[in-house]
Amino acid sequence: MEQTVSESVTNGSEQPVRVGVLGSAGRMGTEVCRAVGGAGDMDLVATIGSGGALAGLTDASAQVVVDFTTPDVVMDNVRWCIGHGIHAVVGTSGFTAERLDTVREWLLDRPGVGVVVAPNFAVGAVLMMEFAERAARYFASAEIVELHHPRKIDAPSGTAIRTAEMIGAARERAGLRPSPDATETELPGARGTEVASVRVHSVRSAGLVAHQEVLFGGPGETLTVRHDSYDRTSFMPGVLLAVRAVLDRPGLTVGLGPLLDA
Ligand SMILES: NC(=O)C1=CN([C@@H]2O[C@H](COP(=O)(O)OP(=O)(O)OC[C@H]3O[C@@H](n4cnc5c(N)ncnc54)[C@H](OP(=O)(O)O)[C@@H]3O)[C@@H](O)[C@H]2O)C=CC1
Ligand SMILES: O=C(O)C1=N[C@H](C(=O)O)C[C@H](O)C1
Image 1 (cartoon, rainbow, N blue to C red):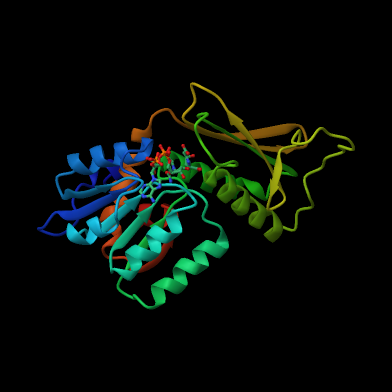
Image 2: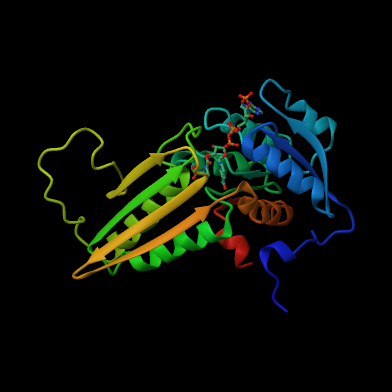
């Protein structure tokens, strides 16, 4: 019988996976420590915050590191993990195409090591992105509105950037012209920013966690694809799935999609 993401609770080995968490005192790190600690097939062996030494990971013989830190430190962390033969599951935002290529290069010297970089670990968000990609070719207009808690330090969100790239590529494949827009004058930011020729608008408000709407428009109709993370527990089944999968997945995996379908 098919299992849901949260029902698949073993790593396929007799031994618990030894997991270290970077950014362990952060909003996501705290939740990841709780989830790993509660997973029967994982041992939380190292928790490292800012100022902590990465050597704590090797000291604890961590097999997999989960990184939810900040865009300015994550590349150093990933490089260190690869160099020390430790698999990495990375949720931190800021992964441009150039950064992903750099990680691929680092991995060439360590063919046994796996890295999973996912802009969003919530299953619903992954599906929202896939649905948006599928819809993109059928509509003249496409814009993204991402809405997050006010302590988020980057805008647009990594999820919105990735979604825009997927939609932009689908529109290009379909030969669509740019979304119609007669704006001649605007206050700075009124039309959001542009990613892959798709307008992206960022909202920050108390009361929000992580939300995104993708709006499509054509003659006489609109389609809205929306996802809401009301709680950071929404990301945990995807994180645990990636921790289990990365052990047998050398090289770079981008996004949770390939793991959901594996
Ligand atoms: N892929 C996904 O599904 C999701 C991704 N994210 C992304 O994850 C990242 C973290 O988000 P969030 O938890 O909300 O942010 P927080 O600011 O709450 O957490 C980040 C943590 O990283 C710590 N940190 C900073 N530098 C280092 C370092 N060199 N080594 C270890 N720890 C360090 C910070 O410590 P200090 O405060 O002391 O500096 C802080 O505790 C963001 O990029 C966010 O966009 C968030 C949710 C889901
Ligand atoms: O900072 C957050 O909270 C989130 N960050 C990720 C992103 O930038 O897309 C994922 C999710 O949106 C929550």
